[in-house]
Length: 275
Image 1 (cartoon, rainbow, N blue to C red):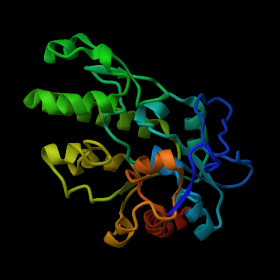
Image 2 (image 1 turned 90 degrees about the vertical axis):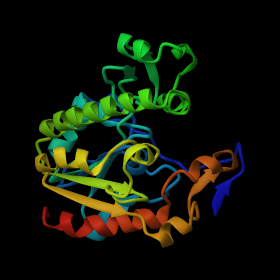
Image 3 (image 1 turned 30 degrees about the vertical axis):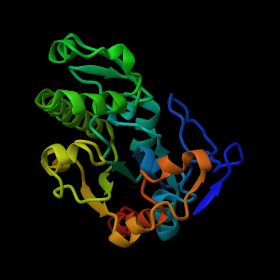
Image 4 (image 1 turned 30 degrees about the horizontal axis):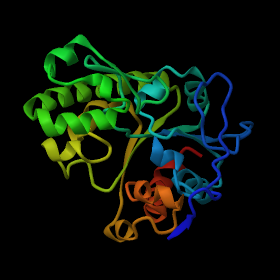
């Protein structure tokens, strides 16, 4: 296990931005004068606590520059209207789009922050009618709100989940339509898409995304790569990750370097044909 003491130096992400985008990405900032591949995604693509996330490992394998446009806690919402990110993705030889969670998307029931998609902004009137006993002023983060509703609201919570899934499919279709490069979808998780269904699937990452939902968007992409972390990789936990002592619990919620290495291996062969 690799960590620094609380208050000490932690992993340097060299945050950077690109022209036309309001998002902050992992650096160092790259020059784009040669053919490159772009990676769009959330925390896993960004590589939080990971010295060399799967994007960098694919770059090593193919000897092709990779542009990491991952954003911590991002959902589809962060990219679908960000002209800078869309332009960078469209100019690439290929765009690898991580399958991100369904709850970080604005929908008929609530609105998320357009860039910090884990932030809950406000409920709609539909939401207030569905959950009349809930005081939504208590919530600042979507995850906190959903955990509360899952515990106390039962069947009504699943009505909300169905709306999130519908909104996710719609937003993914919009995003895929706005990227003018070939797109490879990446499922990167501790389980395969078909392994969990119903309420059990809601608690997994990517949150509330099912095989059926992938089936509704798969034809709009050029390929789908399923990178399911092996039992051996999962057993290593946060070994090799870099975090402060106060971040130890958070690190256990993410896939470690071994899983990133496996994801890079799964991507290398299908991506090689674009170069």
